[in-house]
Amino acid sequence: MTATLPTSDPGTRRRPPRTSAVRVRRRGTDAPNRPVTVILVVASLAVLVPLYVTVAMALKSPSQAAQGNAFAPPWPIDLHNFASAWRLTHFPTSFAISVAVSAGTVLGTLVLSSLAAYAIARNWDRRLFRWSFFYLLGAMFLPFPVVALPQIKLTALLSIDNPVGVTLLHIVFQLSFSVLLYSAYLRSVPAELEESARMDGASTGQIFWRIIMPLLGPMNATVGIFAFLASWNDYMLPSLITADPGLQTLPVVQSIFQSQFGTNYNIAFASYLMAMAPTVVVYLFSQRWVISGVTQGAVKQ
Image (cartoon, rainbow, N blue to C red; front, side, top):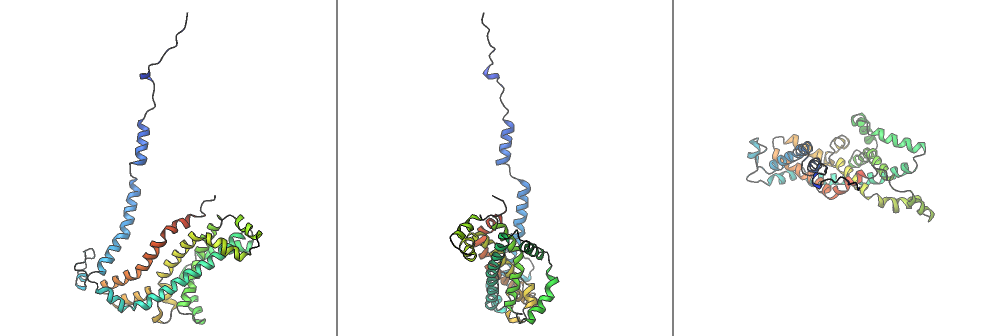
């Protein structure tokens, strides 16, 4: 007598439900994240709407600007506003001064911040370097009005109440944040590279300029764009330090222009567009390195 094993019908086998998997798959791929989308739309409008108003007002004639409707499209387009802004603000002179101050700030910030961060990162076990890093971080929380008056007196005593003094102070104010970025980045650079170079007879200076500095490319772009934007858009420091009105940077000259011709909004907005163009060009060419440079060193490998 043989025993027969019960057989199950293939049609009655229990199958795992597919609805949850399909639902999860659709939620992850097809369904949009509505809160994030709303936030991105609002953030985009916060940038695009003022930009549109600036461009529209810069292209309007004085009669169109006097109507008070900033959102109305400019027609007919009037390009004389740019010529008037060029002439009234002495744009070539102020533009050249702003370029010189910003270029000096970027160059000085890159050199001094990278050197300081390299010394701190490679001598972190020494108390002097460790406390120097904390001192620089503490300077980030120091309000500018607290040190404004001493800076004015000091630059006047040293006879650097001019764009040179503005450049030096811009470099000093950029050191704290730049050293913080460089230090985080240098911790991700393996020390074995330097040890191999020392075995080959390289000095500390040769190691930094020939090995470390080329590896700092993404971070150099990040620190450079931050230093450029901070220097180019700064109004408070040049207005307080520079004694000669003919040597003022572009933001200060635009402020004088706005107070003198307060009703000519179309010419003022044309001047703003002319001053904004270099920052947009610089950021477009270097923005791909900004995020990559900031995130370098954030995660320990």
